[in-house]
Image (tube, rainbow, N blue to C red; front, side, top):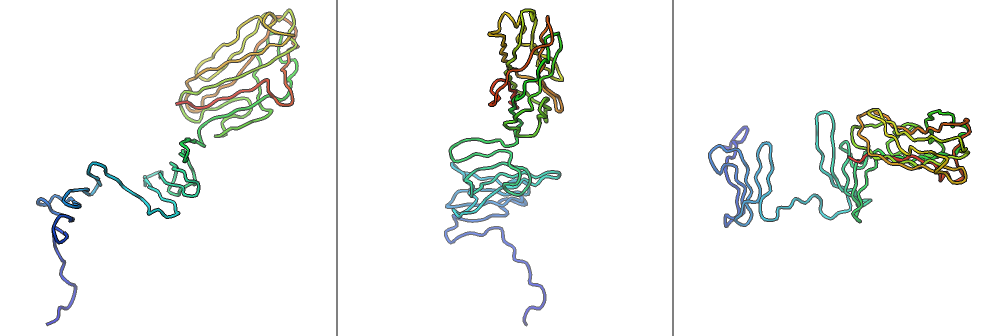
Length: 263
């Protein structure tokens, strides 16, 4: 009589080849709930409900078959996804936000070994106007660097103030060139100011260290910053009249401010 209805399940604990050295086992021991893969007499992988383990002396997982196509691994999170993948068009290994390869790349590694971080906070901006008579009488002046922004990777600099998007240690550097310093201008300093603390640089007699009434100042600092902390540069010249100007030219080579996240 032919069987009518749903066929009975086929139950087996092992699927193996003719000489029994290559096989898949689902019950090596009683009720262990582990799938085991053997190749040529050696166990090469195990799979449980939460873990895939590759075994052997040189375990290798290959994604792709040498075709001209992108390949990726997606980490499917509750609130946010991330991916690691091969951008085959650019020949870059990328780590990024979301499940789609190449949409929001956080880090990429190219075939030369260069590592790029396109969203890493970093900026460089220059002063292109003179800002005449900004100090000289003891005025502490906040320096604007809004003439030419060379780059601002994460849009954290507004022309005067850098705002930290994340907590970390940031490297900042600046160069200022000021002119019209007179013999009465005997006090001067630069203050690099952050939300956590101030850093004083170049505290000298500007007239005695200047050349042809110009004073060039340079400085750098590694500053600890919390998310949303700010950083900016101020300059003070005192002892005389308010006649001090910035030295600028068409290339804006004299006065600039730059910074980036280190760690």
